[in-house]
Amino acid sequence: MNTLDLDAVQAFVLVADMQSFTRAAEALDTTQSAVSLKLKRLETHLDRRLLERTPRQVRLSMEGQAFLTAARELLAAHDRAWSVLHAPPRRLRVGFSGHIAGASLPGLLARVAAHDPALVIEVRVATSAEVLASYDAGQLDAAYVLHHTDRQFERQDGEILFEDDMDWFALPDTCWTANEPLRLAMLAPPCGLRTNVIEALDGAGISWLEVFVGDGVSALSAAVLAGLAVGAMGRRAAPPGLVPVRERLGLPALQPTNVVLYRSVHDERSRSALRVMSAALRAF
Image (tube, rainbow, N blue to C red; front, side, top):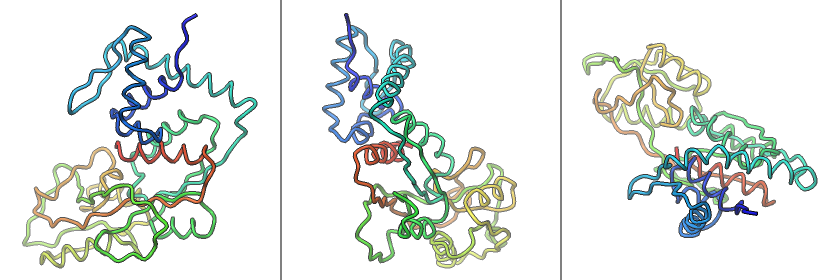
């Protein structure tokens, strides 16, 4: 009877989802070479080439595309069988800055659910300050927040995952000339990005007019989608329909931010789910 190595199948699915051996290795807490070896052994066992590898891109072959659905079903069936006796329900409470989650949140949740279908995920999306306060109060098990790289930050208990750029977004046909105030949609204070925006515009000598104040990135996005103004947000938060306009409108660059993870969980199941989530964030 031919059997498949489930670890290799899981590695294949992660590489396919994230289109990256590096991100898959981060999710599995292993090395890129180990993931590559698993995939080669799986291809040898199946006598099929599943992935097309190039220096810049990883994509599925036609046979890989055909195998992917069955691979997902195999992993899901295995997880269901295992969870009957060995994986009691577990709740993981995670908070996100709206600029980190945004439009990418459905994809993040889908990948964690595929990794651990029995895991109950409780999510809160708010400002970084609000998310961190909830984490400190014991209301969250983990928090993904933003910290501006140019500002002193005394906490040492977070893990910097990567640097993320903030940008200016608007509708594709948005126009503005420097002889009139820039119409702005912004988040309500206190907000680190709001401070970043004001400092950047004032430093560049650009006059501005606040025409919308929103409580949350979804409200900010709605105002910009409605054509009311230009808004600054993380690229992950920008919904379909908005485009970066900094270069076209001649707006100043915004200070980059670090995406920082705080976590208080120590069990391997929760840590594994957070590894998948962090790797997926990097992949978007």
